[in-house]
Length: 111
Picture 1 (spheres, rainbow, N blue to C red):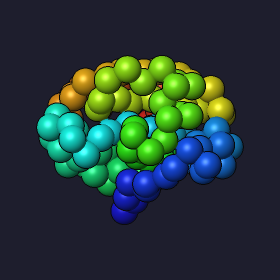
Picture 2 (picture 1 turned 90 degrees about the horizontal axis):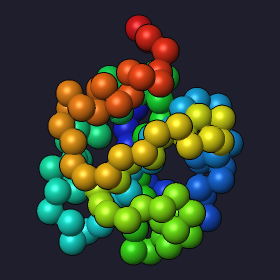
Picture 3 (picture 1 turned 120 degrees about the horizontal axis):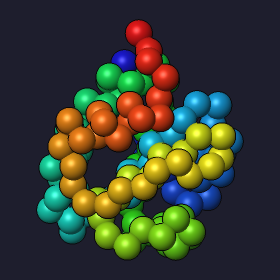
Picture 4 (picture 1 turned 180 degrees about the horizontal axis):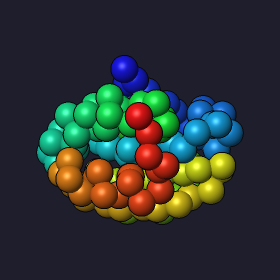
């Protein structure tokens, strides 16, 4: 079972852009109510897709570089990367079904 990894700006290149598998980056803030609703959904995704997807989370306030580079304007926000390229972006809280649809578009079937 995989889990969500917390990263900082300095780790973004190695953990996300150079990762051998697709990476879902979750941008959040401690003061964000909807972000708290997303936490269990991301843990579910890490367990469900951990064999073919890495999930990392970044707190927006201490990590302004990635926030600016990937145009995060609101939290919670998700950015899906593969081979160093941004594939998909969404902002706002989403439920498990929407996250599943978001990921299935880009991930090969696993299992």
